[in-house]
Structure formats: C-alpha cells, structure tokens
Length: 576
Image (cartoon, rainbow, N blue to C red; front, side, top):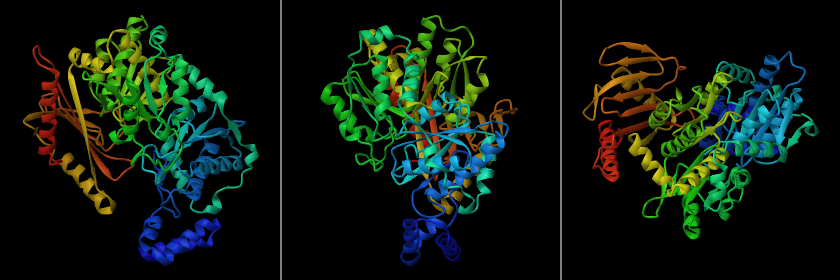
C-alpha cells in the first residue's frame, strides 16, 4: 500500500497544484508515512450525501481539488439533465467552518466556467436558507459547504436538486457516476470568471424570514408574551444572524445571545463538539440562562439545521430535552392549533423517520392527520413533500436527531424555523399558565410516556467496517425471538425490503427504498432499530420504550421503570 500511496502522491506533485499543497505533500513523503497513507490510500468518496471528510492535502481529504472534481461531475450532470434549457443556475451557501468560503468560491468559479449561472451568498448562511434560495431564485441545483455538527477538522459538500431537497434517486447515483468519471484535475474547469458570480444577500434573507413569520399560528399570544426570556446560541455557526432576526420578526423582544459563541469561528473554541445533541455544547447557554432567568434555551449547529433546547422543570432547573421530546412538543403544538383554528380539512399530513418516536404518530392519529414514515435522512421527508405537493397539505416533519421542518417553502430541516415555532409554543404554554416542560408531561399523560435512547458503537478502520458488517449480518440471519423477556412480534428488514410477522409467520413487502436498517417491534411496545452510520465509522442502536400511565402512577416512577427497561435491553444485546 505504501508504494501505491507514494506513487499517487507523486502524481499530485507533478500536476498543477498550488504551492501550499505541494509543500504539504512533500513534507508527508519525507516525514510522515502514516499521515501520507491516510491522505492518499483512497479517494474521498462522493456518496448519496455528497462529500464529507477531514480537511487537508490528498485524495482522501477535503480540499479545493476534491471539491473541484465533485463540482465538475455535478456540472456535467446538470448540463446533460437540463440540456434543453436556455440557462442553468445553482445556488451556493456555506457555514462557518475553516475553508468553507474558499470551497464555495472555488465551486462557484467552476460552475461559471461550465456555462452554469452561480448565485453565491455574500457570507455564511444556514443550510435551510440554501434550500429556500434554490426555489426562490428558480435554480436547478444547489450546494452547501458544511460538515454539519462534525468536529472542526471536517468539512463537507451537500448537493441539492431544483425542488430544494437533497438529491435522491435517481439523481444521486447518476451524479455519483459523473463524479467518478473525473479522474484528473485536468478535467476540472477551475478558471471561471469570478465577476460573473451573482452575489446574494439581504433580499433573500428578508423573503425567507417573512415566510417563517407567516407560519405563526398565534401572533396575538406572542404579542401578549413578547418579553418571554430566551437564550439562543449559534455555537459559532451560521444561525448567528438569521435566528435572532426570525425571533424578532415573530415578535419576541427579550432575546439573549452568548457573546463567546456569537463569534464566527471554524475552530469552535468554546466546545469540544459543535453539536446541540451534546449537553456540553450548551454549557455556556445554560449558564447565561441562569444569569438572566431565561425560560427557554435554544442552540443550533454550525449550519443551523438542527436545534437543541432546554426548559425549566418544576424545580426551576434547566432540563435538556432530546430530539424526540422537542419533536413531540412541536408536533403537538402545531397540530392541536391547526385543529383549534379549524385549519384541518382532512388532507393534512406529517412525516417522521422510522427511528423517531411513535408518539408523533399517536398525536397525528388523535387529530385525524395522516402520517408517513420514511428512512433516516431529511431528504426522504422532502421527497414526500414533493410527492404530495398540490394533493395534500404538509404540517410538520421531524427526526430524532434534532431536525424539524414546518411549511413547504424549505425542503430540509430548519433550525431557524424550528427556533421560531418552539418559541411560539413556549409563549402559548405561558398563556395557559404553563411552560414547555408542563406541555411535554401533559402529552405523556394524554397519550403514553415514551422514552428513547441511542447507543453508537464506534469501530474505526477496515477491521471496524468488517465488524460492523458482521454485527448486521448476525442480527439479520439470526434475529432474536425475545428481547428482555418480551416477544419480538415483527422484524422489519429494510435492506431485504421485507417485514416478518413472527405470530402469523407471514411476510410483507416494504415499499420504502432499500436501506441497511433492521427494526424489531416487541410485544411490550418497545422498538429497537439498528443501522450503520452513513457518514461515520459507527453502528447505531435506537431504543424506544413506552408505558400508558395508569391512575396513581407518578411520572417519576414511570420514567425510572422505562429507564430500567432500556438498560436491560442494552445489557441483553451486550451493548453495556
């Protein structure tokens, strides 16, 4: 392998690369064989989600050359797909990560060089605003430079289609094929005229924020509770301008920032990981909230598509909610208020992913709202919206990994929109003498108490990938008959696209696209889902358990019982 890697690195040195990249590769050849191998042992793969990798020099790194090859492949596909159009346009956005602006400008020049019009935001913007801009500006495609909530060493490249959603079949595979045809830098048209790039700014922001404000269901309640204290942090990311702007447009007047994290910095200096799913990422925001007596804390990730929140419990302590809990509050608020205002006409629907809490389904069923389950990934929620456009009305969609969307003018998860509507839900709760913690407990009492947990098993390298493959194979070929003393009633195998009913021994077809996911439904109402991550070297185990609260039972006792059930399941599966 070392011989092949050195030959590959030498080819890079002999090509037309910049001096800094040349110096880095020369250093690796002479001084760091391990890093040289990591940088060149394979090509950074353009997958169905685009590119994502560590930044640096080499074929297995995010740099202007790997970004350039991906962009040339996408350009070639667009030129074929829209050959009959007089013009083709793309929109481009980026987050706060190191090199994001460089990569975005590089891509814009390549599109221009290929005769494709390029709209580029004047500075960092949330990923969902890129989705909006594609539709608003009439583009045929779009890209955003971001690695979402990954550590600071990473960057990424996500491609979108003309509906504003991330590319899915058949375009995803066909774009991948075009990118694979780009085997040399010489095939990339790097030298587009930068003066032809159309810079966009406040005019798109204003149109986007105006539509978000239009989603408000209770503006009069916001007006009466406009001074509710809210702390928001962008965690050094692209929500820094748009989220406060949206909250103010909704009518909120008491918004506190976290000064240390309002600084746009791709090194994310105040956190280990800029991920609102990680409690540590909200430490400074929680501290600020206690200083000012805030009732609600919200934090978005670097590209502002995910949001994590904290609310005060009955003792006044700030409590972090997980993605399923926030989704339950948001879905309940929106659906119940649509019903209260007579907006439900029988053709409304919600969408969630298969690993997200079934509490959302229960809420939708109560109000007679149709629900759809999709594979993990917000692009599948966007696809349902596109499929139902003009036939049904989309209310809200969500996934357990802190991503939510309302309305249909954006086609990706949207923290700007979610923060606005979560704040409105908090004002609504306050108008009833409650807070969002009370709302969540009321939901549990009305439906069932659902508790979810996630364990990610990390297995790095080639041997790790093989171990993950073997774990899935064993579960698929030898599924358990019981788990934690409860019968496995149904097994959904999304790769084989079959469901197995262990009572009737009948098989049913799964109509969702093929995906390497297994799901076990237990007699006691538990749901266990297993899938390898598509972007990281890990296999994820999702646990969902529930209990219908009986008279006399306390929420604390039910919570403890469900925690023990999850722990027992995890022990039986040898995960703890």
